Length: 173
Image (cartoon, rainbow, N blue to C red; front, top):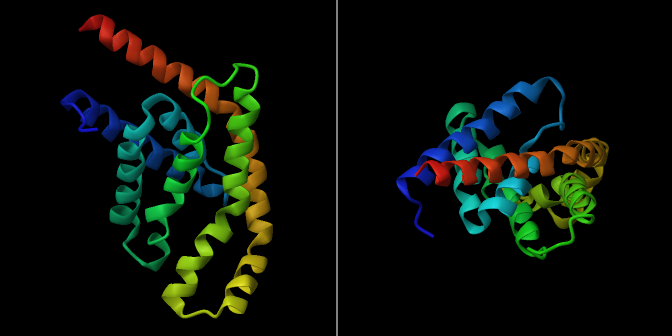
């Protein structure tokens, strides 16, 4: 799984694109393209998709501060990556758009629930308080899930663009 020099450069750029897209979308809370990029990178690069994902996570910590809110980032995007890794590689083309959109949406809907265990551990919340924290965040998770579903329309175009770039870069070699 060791990346080549070329891949290091590509993954650094892709991680930076993830971070830049998040900055651009900050005017709209819980609406972003991080799930889109995570899914697209995983489909194209499989295990190596963890490189740009964690470059994004690291950049987020460096540029926004390594605070307690950042700790769940160490696993939140890996959950989405893992879900995509479990999907069949040879999924029928007609199913791909809806499956990717649904997985992206599910991650958005579950974001607060996935985030909650870290909050509970970090702040000493009881199980009941953790559940209350999840319930309080449900409106935000709904926005996140619905927006992820519609942003998921971009997953296949991103996959196609990455595959085209990969083919063209190998043709130039």
